[in-house]
Length: 208
Ligand SMILES: C[S@@+](CC[C@H](N)C(=O)[O-])C[C@H]1O[C@@H](n2cnc3c(N)ncnc32)[C@H](O)[C@@H]1O
Image (cartoon, rainbow, N blue to C red; front, side, top):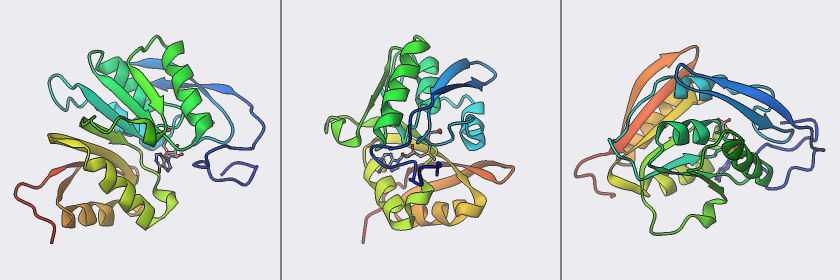
């Protein structure tokens, strides 16, 4: 939360804008990104986000549509766009300031395949080859569960989800819960209190 006492996921942060630049340094990518008050992790790229992006995981050979669920100012979307120039990277958030920053950051870094918008602006016939997210755990368990199921249902049949979640914010129980909802979820790795979770549809799972 910033000093305006608002959560970072509000639609229109009322904190006075104070933009600054942060660096996203990965083995294969170096981006300078604009951040602002009222968006998640404005002072530096979040450690969990960086961990999620360290591993240049190829999900499918030729992804057509990728989703950054909860894009903030766009570190994940911009990295995905740079790594997958043939794909469309959809970047969604509820925070309008974050969406604007994500657009600006893609443009400033010459990344032309990132489309930042509100969730409702994604066309209904778009299905994703992969979803990448540092999800908004702090919105609460039920809203988070609904959000994840809503967007996981938009994966193609062979699509996969890739999430970074802090252990102390319930990564292990989230993985277990996803499993109970028909999503085979494995812990790819774990470091400094963060878990990387990979999830795919369970074969033959039927909701009871
Ligand atoms: C943990 S932050 C991650 C932000 C960014 N991806 C990063 O790594 O810096 C989660 C983001 O999810 C957004 N969010 C919250 N509720 C959402 C919803 N219902 N749909 C989409 N995004 C949401 C928040 O505004 C926030 O920007």
